[in-house]
Image 1 (cartoon, rainbow, N blue to C red):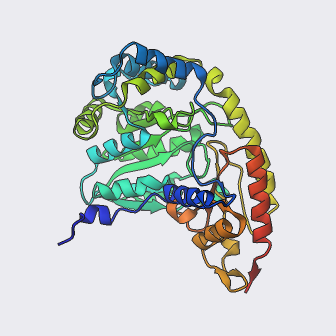
Image 2: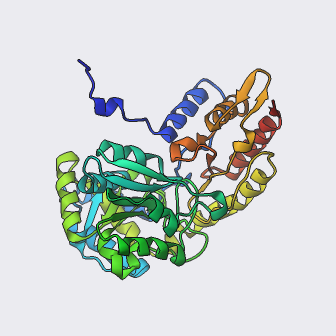
Length: 400
C-alpha cells in the first residue's frame, strides 16, 4: 500500500519554485548565481502600508477574522473595482484569501467536477495546470504564437471547445508572456462566452497595475457575460506584498458563497494584520502607490529587450505588462558545446545555470516547450550582468 496518496504523487512541483530553490542552494555553496526565475518584485512594501500593519497590531487585530475577510476590506475592494474597472460588485461578492493562488484554487474546486474540461491558453501560469488536475479536471491546452503576442482568439476557443468544456482560465497582463489583452482581444473571449453560457471564465488580473500600455481592461466589464466571469486579483505584485499573502475574487453571489464555504474548511480567513495593510493599500491612489515601481520595471523592460535582441538564436517580442520576457529559443535546439547537447528548453536552462550562473525557467512549465521565461524583477546591474553572461554562454553553442 502506498503511504502517500496518488493525488500528491501525481502532483508536479512548481517549476519556478524548484528553480528558485536550486539557485539558492548554489548561492549558499558560494556561487554567484543571478536568479531570474521567480516572479517577485525586488521592492519593499510601501511605508504607508507597513505603517497600517503596525497600527493593526497595536489595535489588537489578532483574532479570527470572518472567513471571506473583514467587511470593510471587502467593501473597499468592491469600491476599487467600481473606481478603477467600472465593475459593480457588492461586498458579499468579494472573498479575500491567502493569496491569489488560493483564490484560484477555491474557484476551480467550486466549479470543476472530475472529467470537466478547462480551456487553458498557452503559455499559462504554472499552477493553473496542476490545480485543474488536482480538482479532477482535464486541462485543454490552446497553443498561441509569439507573432500574435501569445493572445488567444475566438477561433482558437471554438476549435478547442467541446460538450465537456466548463471553464476558461487566462491572465492579463499575462504571466509568463507579459501580454496585455486590450478591449478588442477581450471582445473575442466575451463573444465565445455569450455563445456558451454554461462556461465559466477566470480572469486573473494580479498584474493589473504593472501595465505599460495604458488603461487596464477587465473581462467582467462586458455586461452580457459578467455572471460567467470570476475576476481574481491581489496585492502581491502591484503593491510588492508577496509575503503578506492577500488575494481576492469578485464573483457572482452564488459562487462567492461557495468559495467562502470551501475556504472555511481549508484555511478560514487570511491574516488579520495583512488585511488591515491591504485596506490601506487599496484605498490609496494606485498611481501614487505604484508609479515608481512601474517606471523602474518599464526602464528594465526596454534594456532587457535590447540585450535579448543581441543574443543569437533568441526570438523575443516586447511584453506590454507584468515583468517577464518569454522568448522563443527553439533555434538553439540541436546545438552543442563539447559533449553537451541542447535538445530542449530544459537543457538550455540547465546549461545557462551551470555555465553562466543564470537561473531561468523552461517554457514547458508554462505549456510552451519552445520558450524560456525570464523575470526582470531584479536590479538593472544584475540584469545587465545576467544577459551578458547568457550571450557569452550561448555564443559557445554550435549546431551539430
